[in-house]
Length: 367
Image (tube, rainbow, N blue to C red; front, side, top):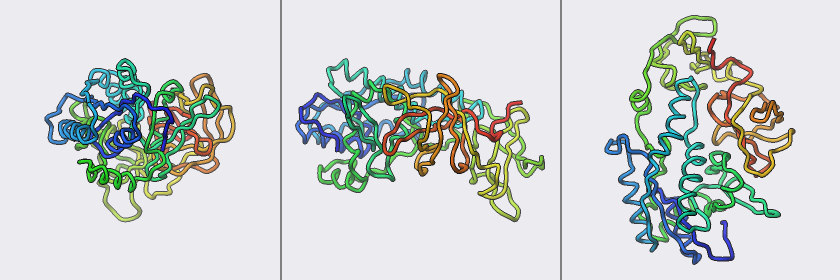
């Protein structure tokens, strides 16, 4: 795990989950001066049955009490709504599928929270992310977490060098079962709490119902690439490329998958079979580039993830301009989705990446 021979003033982001709970307990055990912060970043419907903010805050307070640290409740709801949620809605309106966890880390956890912690006198902040950090020649490198099943470096790729310098990831060298065991050893109330899987800071809820509160829906046809109508969709924003479940298309043959969205005609293009050629792409273009090291990677050979938990895919990087780059893959990639992030790696080092805007297949058709 990440350790520092000198004791530090550390503020831990306590989410009410097991990972951040163990993070705080480990740092306290090591003798650091530790304080907790619970971030409340969603207020629109925090009395909703699917929103766990209240229970999470109770759990975070209980953990702080057992660990023996103070905890502050800090509200970043305005910043979240302006800098994360507004982008989230804009992307869905444009037919893309955004990744709010990436933006949450860049805009809230390692910006608003980091600024707050520094103002409180903290040397660094710590989170329960499964990632590692190494300092080589004064440069801070973001590395994959040791637990390949939990590695979260993909979600941290937008961290800038100055943010990495102020960050600790104490769980980076641990595997999830060991974290659960430590939580039990520390007698933490979150030891058996399930991992959250909902929208960052909003919680787990029926996604379609939630999105309908904020965006108008527009039913339309599901069509084959040849133009044959095979079903009806309930709004293009509710579907993502490669989606199989929830299409409701009957009949014989292989399963149906979403292959493209035609925003001009409000049609969802679907194909049969996981290995249909329209689901594979050889290259992508990404913009809004962000890198973790002081200098951006040189053009050349790397590996890339276009979604969380996929295997690294060998590729070649070429810059198109200062904020746009092309990735060409050695092997065609399945269901590369505009709005998601393409994250570059050099071995275990996470270099950064960008937001996918297009591929060599017409997956978002606007005209």
